[in-house]
Length: 150
Image (cartoon, rainbow, N blue to C red; front, side, top):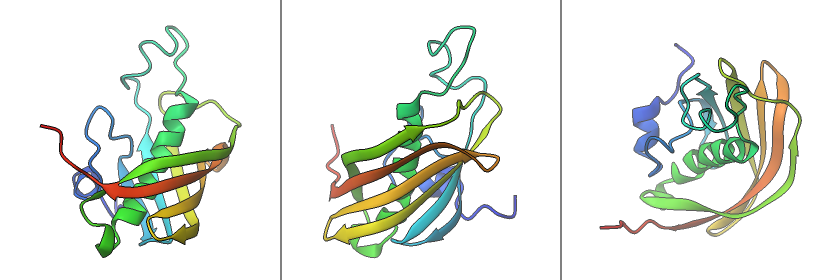
């Protein structure tokens, strides 16, 4: 696709998430440290569908918020001063779930940074399918050193 700015391999160069918990597939637009648009293709074989729910597969809302957080992390951790660090949740506010997200859907993820002071900031986040809002929230994050577990 010509509208892909970063693919999964390039995303993994910025954030430490790996399968099965790397939950964004591509970045389509980004103004580093300001805003990002990313995408997750919801496939029938996603790990969560086996148990959520058998016979009625629905993407969990908390995972959609994680997808938004990962997109926001790519936006912030692409700043040179945050290279090699990780983004952690500081809070989730004003979360609203408006639409089920099902296998075959393409989830568009948008995060716009509305505040930042040092390593702490807040992003306004919206996930949608075909222009229809599925989830919206404000995500507060903290940029931290990413020590490796051995």
